[in-house]
Image 1 (cartoon, helix red, strand yellow):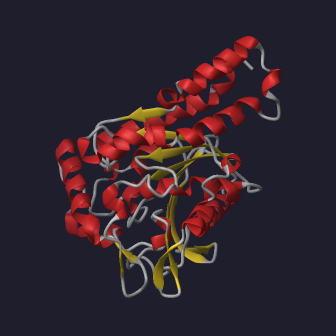
Image 2 (cartoon, rainbow, N blue to C red):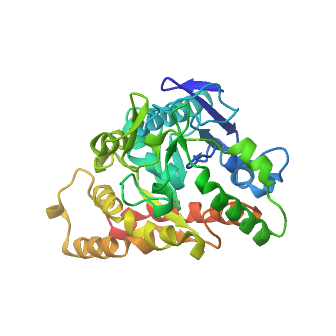
Amino acid sequence: MSTAAGFPVLYRYMAADKSKPLMVFVPGNSHLARIFYGCPEAREEDFISYWVHRSGHPFLAISFPIANKAFDGYYPNFTIADWGKQVAEVIDKIVSENSLQQEVIVCGWSMGCKIAGALGKEAIGKSFSIVLFVAMSGDPAVPGFLPKANAENIAMTPEGLANRESLYPWFFQALEDQSTYNGHTILPKDIYRQRILGATPVGLIGTGLMYKNGQFVEDLEWSLKSANTFNYDDYPFPVVIHGDSISDAENVLLNTSNWAFIRNRVLIKRVLGTNALKGLSPAQWERLQELVECSGSHFSQSLPGGHFFFWGGIGAKLILKKIILLTKNVRSIPDLINL
């Protein structure tokens, strides 16, 4: 346990080959980052951390404060701006103290995707640069992009947090589905609930609700500003990985297109740098148009499973391959345009 951005933070770092980029994982709604590295009661190969570490990449998973015994106290006023600053400070600390290479890969799952703009802003001037931001079954911080069930039934706990227990049956079913797919129990439901789940600061969910003066208030302007949603210049390059199950239909069908308005602006900036469009040759201009048109397929991947597709050894191993593939695709952008 440590403190970053003025709030408590729980993180897990696993050292590996310093010549390879650090892979950072940010959890979603109501979840600790243990969803990426597991508990003593589970098999280590059922979690992403095992496969990342085995590949030689340093691993880092960062938990924001939720209502779980892992944290002392409650922090209902924690916002996406605080979240971005907290994650940036932890990455900066790990990279600096361990003399890691400057480039890092950040992966946000579900609600964790909403940190992209805020984190990109806070990364400016730090000891690291983000090669790409992997959005795992999640959308940018735009109210209205949320799956309907995630935006409804948001009740306030006595501590001022968002009670998301209405979603727990869906979480439990998703865990059971992944266990069935992998042929064994990944994590007992009671351990999952006790060690990983908890009520969440409402400002992180992205509905436009914020915590103020002891209550939830609708403040869309504050919500968007906190997430740095429309400051495209601050974003790391966003790529998408989602499952293929109808149980997570909105993410499967819409994640890639929902990131398009950010992805293509960042893509154009990545291609041009400080140069003007008029500096492109006719052939380069044609290739840029083609790349923007097909950016969704070029910078997105899917794999079997639902919202928790990365749980269990099958998905945990496969998602690492997808991340590495997408990293290669992003690094190849100059070659695709022939700059």
